Image 1: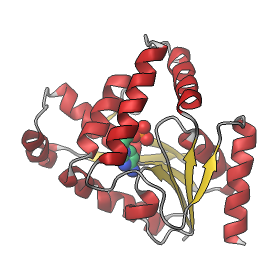
Image 2: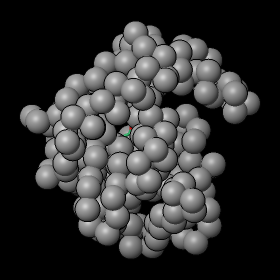
Image 3: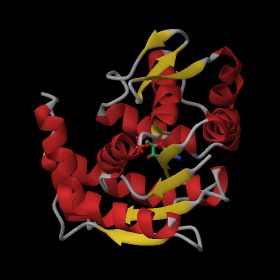
Image 4: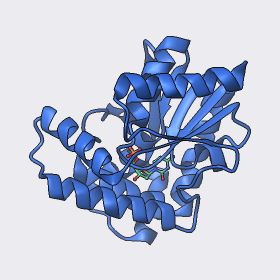
Length: 219
Ligand code: DC
């Protein structure tokens, strides 16, 4: 099996680029952020906001990923939540729960199993460093804070969400800081990752840049 790991900060374009490449290569695209978002959503719905309670409620949670035409759908305790997890509130809670070791351990086997059974392109924060340290290709995808905020802001507006530019900017800043400064599995490029900065490139150019890296590594 072939595994491609893409890590990077919020809004770097990981999911859009990984999805396009997965389609081109007939791999499955695994968006691991959705797993932390589902746990975050559970905590919001059940009004749980205490580390110990978060950990003790994990045994009540069932998270499943299904792939329909190579497209990921996420289920929380049997109900599909693929759309519901894409709000700024869930983003912040996902980042919060993701700093807890027990939450990361809870989601570890699911991620590794997928990579054992399928050719995957998997995106997240710790794929190249912790989840798939032996991945065939590791990419750290990044872009300036301004570009990432612009892209995320437009995406949210297109979905009809009531957001402000400054709100998104502050959320991304806080998430970047928290995700890269936590003790467990912090966001950072793996020693053997290729860093790709997409600040100056449009989507098509960015996809081609990443594809070039993948083709070189796999050849
Ligand atoms: O990729 P995303 O924005 O959907 O991720 C939401 C949060 O989940 C992110 O702020 C940090 C956490 N996360 C993580 O800790 N490890 C991953 N592999 C993916 C996401």
